[in-house]
Amino acid sequence: RSTLCVPSKALAAAVAGEWAAQGAFVLRESMPLTLLASQAIDLIPNQRPKILEDSVRFLSSDTACYRVVSPASLRARQDAHLSPALAHLESKYSMRLPIVEDLAAVAVSEKAATTLRALLEGMDDYEIAAFQYAASAGKSVVLALGVRDGMLD
Image 1 (cartoon, rainbow, N blue to C red):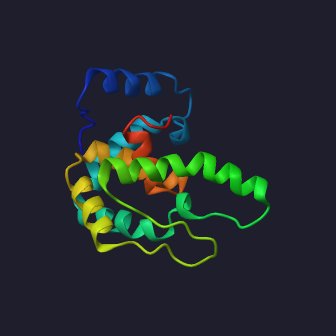
Image 2: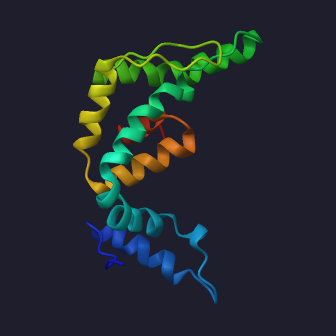
């Protein structure tokens, strides 16, 4: 185990607040920032190459790329909410991903994979931890990048 030392006073205050809010029992699920900081300290440095490759592979099943054929009303909502994130990915990172209308894997170009890999390699361990959490929660690397870039809340 490592010392829980975080890179900013704001994060330190938030983590301290999570700990101060604990009662008689420590409830890990009520401490998301502590969990992310612990992953950034203990997990990411030891498994970074695997985590980055898993994130790149995750593009092939990114939910932002999947659309229904019908009903048309659902397709319209998917397009309205997900297409801007794909457009952001293309305009900011020159990564183009196709729309898929069946259960086939998303065809990820080598250029897109290389671009994502380079982007992830440039992130520090805390950014990787937050990115990995967002991608897992949203089932989407595309949406996680949108959150990271302030495009999505």
